Image 1 (spheres, helix red, strand yellow):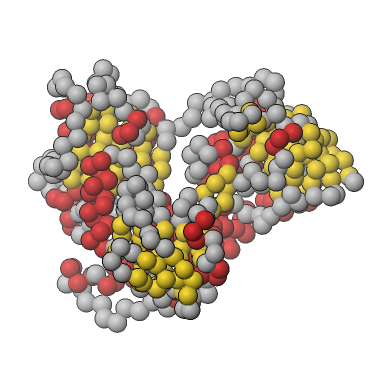
Image 2 (cartoon, helix red, strand yellow):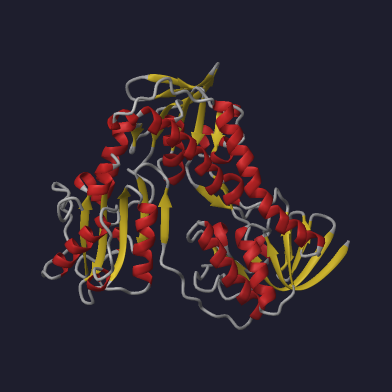
Length: 478
């Protein structure tokens, strides 16, 4: 068996692992990545990119069918399922190819070992049966995998995970989507718009990442106008039958060709033999991972990316990889890093965005909110996308912006503006000094900021008057 000695061993060659290697070597350490494959990041292979390709096709079909509001007639809109999925796979493979160019170069240079790594002691990893890697510090960046609840595990080939959708040869005739989080909402709406008979069911009123009750209420209302969706519903049974899966609802049974389970993802830790590393505490599982250092407990092993379970997003995985890689390289010296302002986007229509502090994390005595209902927002109405509600949050004592929960048109863009403002520590007054062009969707943010400015000037505890959602646009046409 071959033996390799390095300063830093990295389990995983995805976004977090690649960035960990780069940071470790920049800090002067030797490093090697270990990955069993398939190579290519979760984002490129089964996440961000193929899902956006499917959504792009779905939106094209939807807008063609609904162009009549502008006086534009489009007859005979059809969806060619194999052609849609062929483009998804072709472009997906192109994105993956860019990643593989980098990983192939690392393999040729000896910086990547192909195989499944497992710990044999706190400072040694065995890669399959061909290599032992001895290290001073390690980074675990093994990613995540879809979670399938027990009732759905016996559905055979009628069961789909989000990883499976992008390898289909044709669109199913019908699908039940289990889960109304980010993945369920994005894929469920996309399949519906592509002509698939689609039902979505969730539990505990989960609507993506939203926590603000007023924004959630508006999102539930708007999604229900388009989709067959139940956000808090317990199925009474599922069984495999000829032609698909029979699903028992309260008032009826229905058969779906496929069931797409989007019940979240779990850290990929199986088979690592963590018990010999000192990372596990008796009866409590894994020691806490510090998000500012990546360090697990007080040991020499660091976590980065989806496996850390902090913010499972590509840009966060890249940051966490850099943090963990640097600290592993300089261990036992460990530096706490400042994390970027949280920013997350859900690519539904309307979109959802989360910036900074969430509603559920705010102290009602220390914070207040401002909002805009997009019903009469000028540019949004021009484009017939005038649906949604955005709430921005500010700190009473300082007037500082701290976060936002957003459901509305183009919030992938306006969310970035607010994230930058929060990260720079802008007050509401200072944010309102920034230029706003007319007519643009971004003017809606100015309306919400003005509402927040007015509320911050009054004493009293933050309330949630969802009965009267507003205000509308702050001035005519805005």
